[in-house]
Every structure is written in structure tokens, then in C-alpha cells.
Length: 98
Image (cartoon, rainbow, N blue to C red; front, side, top):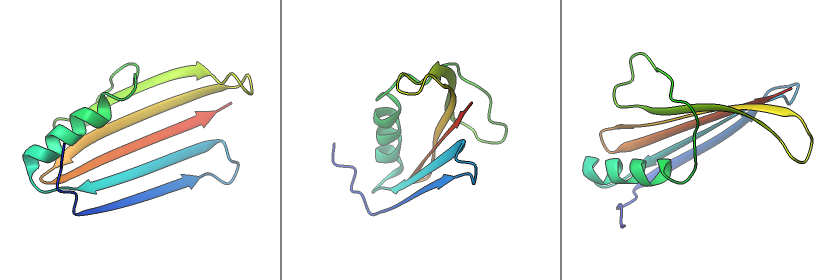
């Protein structure tokens, strides 16, 4: 699909103790219809776990899960959300490990 990508932003942050990570992606595309199609495609890439509510964000897709990291044997909790505002797709993901 040609989404007519016009602009984007990416940020990755890690807590000082390196236990929590947050990633933000913003994609601006040609039309709101193309933004909705991009949102669907990005969300379909992986299994996101159990949906959860995000008050004040209509149409948000969300998911959370807990898993064991095979390389370290640590437990990792993840949460992901994605939503569209006009021609912008916002995707936010976070992970915290014990």
C-alpha cells in the first residue's frame, strides 16, 4: 500500500535502572483513510495479548501480555496501543522486566 507517507517521528526511552522501555512511533500519511489502513496493517503484525481500556482515546487498539524472555529467563510485561488522529497514526509500546 502506498500510504503517501509525509512525516514521521520515533523515540525510544529506557528508565535509569534499565527495567522499563517505552517506544513511540508517529506516522503522518496522505489521508485519514490511508492512516486507518496503516493502523490495521501495523497492528496485525504481532499478537498483542489481552485488550485493555484507554480512557479518552476513541478507537484505540490495545493489548498487554506477560512472557518469559528465553535468553534471560526473566519475566517481561508488555503493553501496546495504536490509534489514528486524522492523518496521523500513533503507536506506543512499553515493556518492563523483573
